[in-house]
Image (cartoon, rainbow, N blue to C red; front, side):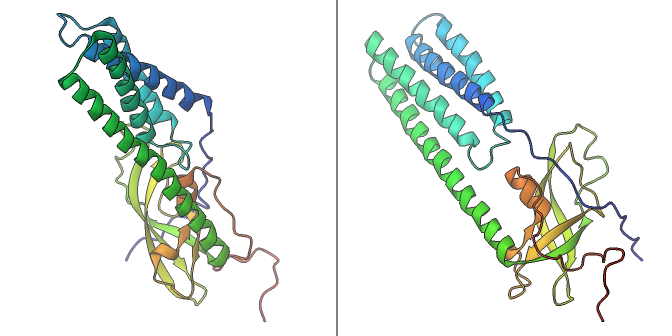
Length: 257
């Protein structure tokens, strides 16, 4: 017989603070680094030693790229890694154009500039498409929460092994199994891939809220899990504005006849 789940209460997590200056600094570092590295790579292609601009630009690219990957997390609806890649490759292409014009280069150097420009354009398209896609997904979550029935849910299986947090307190993505009872009294199970942050560990027995569509009770794509929504979009955990199905009756509350 399976052991009963612990009663850990509602899962709580605060959104990551948004500091727009940090991504802006990382973007400027990549821009400057790409320009210098692109110029230095072509200008020193036939030189016995790499140009200083290539070395300095390479350092700025590494620092700016790593900073961008770390600092965009609080902005899932606006920023993504592809935007950083686009900034790097397009600025490197621009630096290459300057090198070609200044040093009268041709042939493979022009091809290299074209490859950088084409790659950067593709990255930019992805960088612009992803936020639009995410905004539509976020809006759909809001629509489903507005039309769905909120039900109290519990984490049945957090999908983690006991040693998963031993290597640090970063973020671990895992498939979490939730259990909830719908408005018709039927018990359902729901699976979601959740990125669990080290600052707020998720465990079996944690409670949350699931909004589901009673007309399509088995369609997981029409369900929204409060804690998953909060972690995915870096927003506060949403609270239902109507009574929650399956919630415990508060002490002193009137009992149905």
